[in-house]
Image 1 (cartoon, helix red, strand yellow):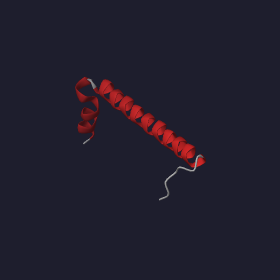
Image 2 (cartoon, rainbow, N blue to C red):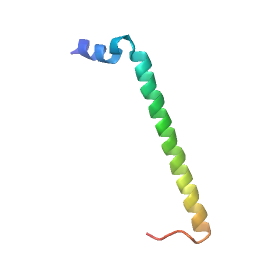
Image 3 (tube, rainbow, N blue to C red):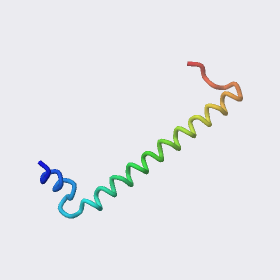
Image 4 (cartoon, rainbow, N blue to C red):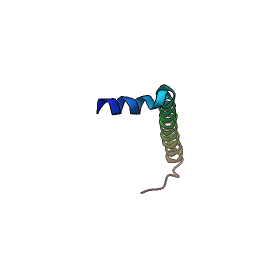
Length: 56
């Protein structure tokens, strides 16, 4: 079982490249989510200050 797991994570010698690429992609997507949520909150505050926010 451990040999299978280590072989999976090594990915034929390219594991470091593959897992770092997954990490970079995850970090980029996470950053986009954080920025998007911040921009959404900022837009809602701007609309609310002008009395234009739609009620739910």
